[in-house]
Length: 244
Image 1 (cartoon, rainbow, N blue to C red):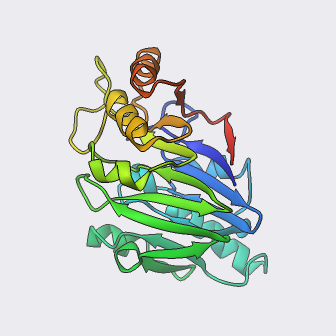
Image 2: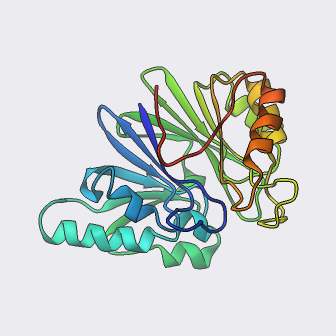
């Protein structure tokens, strides 16, 4: 399994960046996990829409789904030109209802996370955990050939996330809140220390902090997280790929 980071900023991107979006590649296909602002332009550097097995959206905030409409335009073109035969599968929460209605299209086939316990996409088993955000939101676990990748999505600290991420090979955890940052002080998020505590308790192999604040003190965040985790901690970056 290969994980490419397409976007990692929380709320809104910095110049040339993108908000949440991760491309997971297996021997059997590709999964786009979240599709935030700017993600489609980044996807074009790594893949094409017709190569995707499907899309999984952790929740329906714009920084995680703003480019879904753009993706559907690309799917319409691929269908029209016979580069794709079937509609694009999109799995997401169905609330808030206005956002759920907003992402419906003739180019996509939608499934509700609430109605799924686990399912298979690109040969990988995908599982969900409801987390604590301001709207319905789900952490995502992707297992392929005994390798496990877990994505926290947006959440406050949760002990249930420790169990969900237990012994994962790779853990992408949100760290939106940072001392001195004015990027966000809103509810439903964690800081680097809380992310690291979950990672330590879960005994994950590697921790990557993501959903970063645009004005964060990133060296401080790395230091705080590493001190708790007990190992080196990485910050999400578009230049990095992770292989499991």
